[in-house]
Length: 274
Image (cartoon, rainbow, N blue to C red):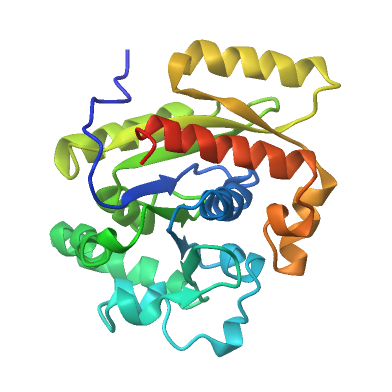
């Protein structure tokens, strides 16, 4: 059976957590935005890194891409220090390293470097940059693109752990073995301390039997790694990013806001109330 986690000591500096699933539409960016803002709401200093060329985490926090001078692209390709690409958001304790469409080109640039047997360059740039700022934050959350390509490898190489969002729908576990295999290879070859922080069930429609069956299947597969919190399917969660706000600011009394606050509390508890 595939080994998908290892024991890990909690770091005394900022915890780096990547949100990863090569399938799109599973609530990865929604979770990146709302987990980050909920951790900040609970008093934790948080940095969100948008590592997706679509820039949905960036715009979802109200950042105007046309006004971005330095982004995660500049950091990845070595044009600037990460400190110069950090933007404060109007939300409590939350900053972001934004993304721009140029990041799509970085994927190809990094692939070409790796093709020339310089994988170390690929995996070390983001990690080294994060190491210079880890002590400034309690949590650093990385929103990865829906791919297991070179950008995601960079994120996993730099991370302490991974959160895997899984949609509560048919075929939800498709591709999970491939993702777990990738994590295992990263553990073996690049980042032996990489762990699975948890598996998050998202977009649950509690009125359907199928959704509840998926919950049961995922919990059987991942056991204690599954978060107790389940994110419901809600219109408000879809609306909030179009207003440039996390759900806790857009509709603080909604079920979605409560769910992400509960998730943030679980993450804090899993890290010894870090």
